[in-house]
Amino acid sequence: MGTTDDFDAFYTATSARVVHQVYAVCGNLSEAQDAVQEAYARAWIRWSWLSGYEDPEAWVRTVAWRVAANRWRSVRRWLAARARLGPPVTVAEPSPDRIAVMAALRRLPEAQRRVVVLHYLCDLPIAEIAETTRMPAGTVKVYLARARAALAPLLGTHDERKESDVSAHP
Image (cartoon, rainbow, N blue to C red):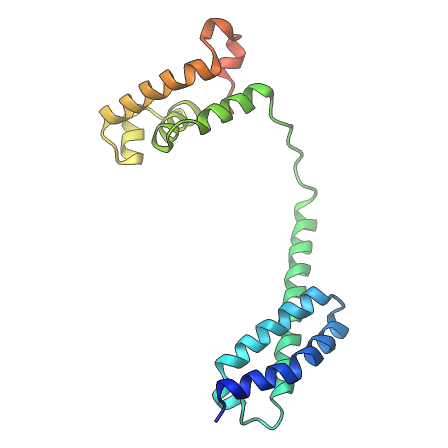
């Protein structure tokens, strides 16, 4: 039956030819190489019985063509879905205040950041944050207090900022 050395020799002797054949069919060298590598990986798994085939190269070539065709079908389905959905929604660039808030939030420890986002952006009460995060309510309150203290120097005080800037959500 097929051994590792047999497969290595088979791969060395046939891979360039199969890549060229698949490339001729799909028209994209990168896609052809990916499809052929996938086909050889599948061949390796089945090498013990595939090596007994009269023409294992034909099997690899057929699998590679199918892999390439499936990728193109996936691309066509994606394009059709995009056409049905219409053009992507245009999103405005973030304001400088929003960028500042996001940068400040990134400087908080993850647990504090999560609590701040749930409380101020998702408008969840302390009890619901505690339930969601599986933290005691007292811990949630401590994290909020620490986060406020850490954010204050990063974002300025309420007096330094306009009311609309403070209430803006990132």
